[in-house]
Image 1 (cartoon, one colour):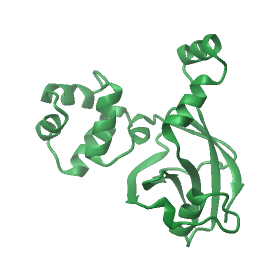
Image 2 (tube, helix red, strand yellow):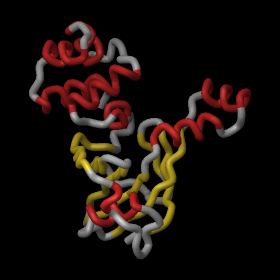
Image 3 (tube, rainbow, N blue to C red):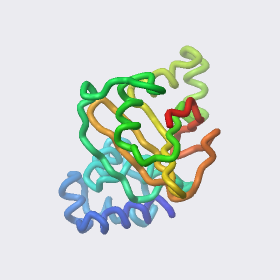
Length: 190
């Protein structure tokens, strides 16, 4: 599916017209139509607003490999309510384990930015590793691969939310790419 097809599907799933979405985003209806027909792309700020309004992740909208499904669950949490125990190294691990008690396996994930050529050049000129460090600082989240039966879920835990995305197709925990990030298996929690 292209970006435009995903946008249109997510908009219809949310039950809003192009005009309603345009009003909420403070853009023209023709901009929404242009994006849905893949004749243009929104800027980063519009992508963020769009993903929040349609309750889908930016990764889902931009993922050409279609590894993420449209199903995303976002739940508010209080990180301070969770304590690290057993295999959990921190409170984010504890949240993931507590919220996925029926999981067969839970792997912590190491996430790295899949850099563009210009980002590689900037990284090389400024300071090797600076783009990756900025990406990690900006996100400040824990990432997990949760397996329940035949289904897999990409889980992100921040200080305020746990966001669960069902994967449209199985991935190898040893390493996979979604959107502009590469993930590889860290340690097994469950």
